[in-house]
Length: 483
Image 1 (cartoon, rainbow, N blue to C red):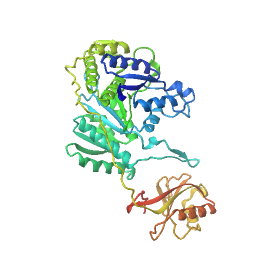
Image 2: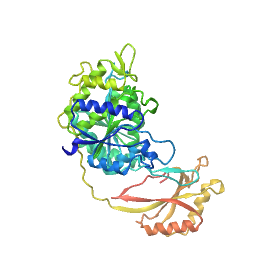
Image 3: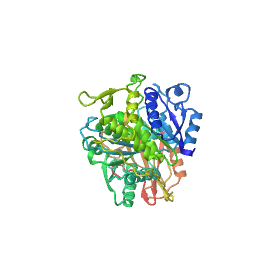
Image 4: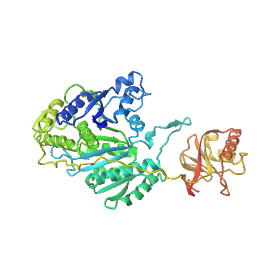
C-alpha cells in the first residue's frame, strides 16, 4: 500500500459521526482505495484534559499519514480551550485554506445562479496568531503578524490554483489603505507575483468594499486571495450567498500535509436524528481525493452528488415543496448518491478535472535586509492630572536620558496628543511615547536600555516597547500625525 493510501479520519462531535459515515460509505462504493486510521478528537478529548482537543497519540497518526479527513467538533464552553482547527493548521503548516462556493440553482435557492467563486485564505498568520496582552486597566492588544514568506506562499498558491483549474482571474483583498505595512506588504507581494502569470487577470479590492462585492456581485469574482481574518469572514458571506452553508467543503493544505472538512459546525441540536446534510464533508472529501491524485474518483463522486441534487433528492435543509422530489435523511441521501455513481447531471454543469491538479508551491529564502535602529516607542500606563498629555509630555522631556534619544511625540490609541494635541480627543491610560535621535543617528539597544532606566527613575510605568527600524533604508514603522 502506498504512503498516501492510508489517511486519518475523525468522526467528530454532534452530527459529525453521521455525516462521516455517509461520506465514507460513498467513497468506499466509489472504490477510492483508501485505508482509514480513526482518531478521537473534540469534546471528549477536551474534557479528558487535552486543551487543544487532540491527544499526543492522535498527533503522531496525523503526522504519519499526512492526510486528514475531519468531521466537525464541539468545543466546550468556558475559557482555557484552544481552537483545534487553528492548532492543527498552524502545527502542521497548513498555510492554504481553499473554499469553493458554487450556486446550484434552481435546486438550492440563490440570487446568483452563475456564482462560481473560490476563496483562498491564508491560514497561519494575521490576528489568528492569538497573541494578546492586557497592558493597562483599560487597554488590551492583539498582535497582527504578517510575514513575507507566509504571504508569498498563499499568493503563489492562489495563482497556481487558478492555473490548474482553468480560472481566469485572481483578486487580492486587503485593508492596506489603513494598515500600510502589514496589509501593504501582502498587496505588494501580490503585485510582484501577478507579473509571473500574465495569462491570469489580477486585481485588488479594499476588504470592506470587497466584502460587499462578495455579497452583491459574486459572479464577477473568480479566485479571491486574502489574509486569515478577512478570508474567514468573506467565506461565510459567500456560503450564505451561494445558498447554504451546509453544502461547502474546505481544504487546508501545506507543504506535506492536508486537512479536509466541511465549513459548518457540529450542530449538536440535530445530532443523532438522521437529518443532517453530508454534502459539505463529502465535497471536502472530493477535494482530498484530488490532492491524493485520485481526480477520477473525485469526478465520479461529485457528478453523482450533482445528479442527486438535480433529481430532487434533498435533505431537509434544502428541501422545498414543489421543487424537491423527495425529502430524505442522511443515510438515504448517501444511498441516493451511491445509486448514481457513474451518472452525470444534465442541467447542472458536470465536474471535470485535469489529470494532475494537486498544487505544489515552493519559495526561496530571501537574504535578510539591512536593519538599522532609529528610535523606540515606549508605551506607558499613566492616568495622573486628569490625563493631561502636556503633563506627561513635559515630564518626559525632562527625563535624564542619553543625548541619543529625545521625546518626539505622544499618541493615545494612535492619535497625536502631544505636542499640540486637541483637548477633545478621548484618552485612555495607554500612551505611546516616541523617542528618536534629532540628528538621525543610528542607535543600538544600549541607548534603549539607558532610556528605559531613565523613564523608570522618573516614576513612569513602561509596559512595552517597539523598536523603530529602517530596512534597507526604508522606514519599517507607521508615522504619526505631525511627523
